[in-house]
Image (tube, rainbow, N blue to C red; front, side, top):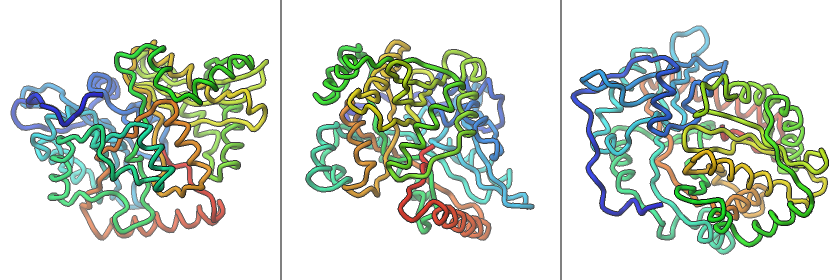
Length: 409
């Protein structure tokens, strides 16, 4: 990745004032692919959330050209026309241009949300703020604790992010969780493998020695990797649930993954630019690891995975991820997103091992501007926060005091 603090070219600004209005799912997907939007903003993702109301919005300039798109998920208060509006990981926008005048882009969205009865608007800002290389993060975890790497000079320190953050602070967009432990959302810190301009050989070389050794072990053990559709969900969920029990997190239900795989299947998702598949790593048809991977344009994302304790020496999880990375390279992807991690993890948490697994694959740690929330009606927002806090408390009691919710996506 290039250093974002180096000299920047002036962004191309839209013509005249911007407006926001609903668009079709097909129009939204075309813009998302063009601008590099998140899988969480796709029509396929909307179909995985049937308990939320979804609206696709387009940003239009004065000439009528569509210059951005986003998915708004809304959840209503019971029996009231008041809603919480959420754009997970943020809309697909030309963020360099947004940084030049954030209000021109964000204010029309706020106006739309207010007219739609929203009492709060949560919006992701998918702009890279800082980045650290994997060896730096791994060393600091060992020496000073999980998040101590954030005190070190980053590989990337993006002035565009600073401009957006300054504007957000000035206009009362608060980071999620400000005054409530009930807030959940998308991770601010992601583990991402940079694939731009890289061959499979270069990607393999960027992995640490343990990873390369484990890939060789998997090959010698006869591990084979295949991709399957919705028929693979049952096996996937068995392995995922086994992993949840081993690592002390609360698993999602099987129907959730069935819906997700169907939504991101090539026919349903709308072509080759938005796809999803389950990978299985097996030895003589004994499936040892399984994972769900989706792709939007030039970015592949590993969402969920699971493995069994059987035959651990076969290193099936390494073989699976290596195949998914090679497939991403063959599809022209510039990034393989291993998703985020819980920044409150202790050094002895079982999930620290998952973070080290991602770093060993050659992933940089990326800090985003992240998600912010704008309160539009404090009375209804407070009522919603109390209801969500009660819901979280009930779920925690059901799951057990030591369990962590699997709430990344």
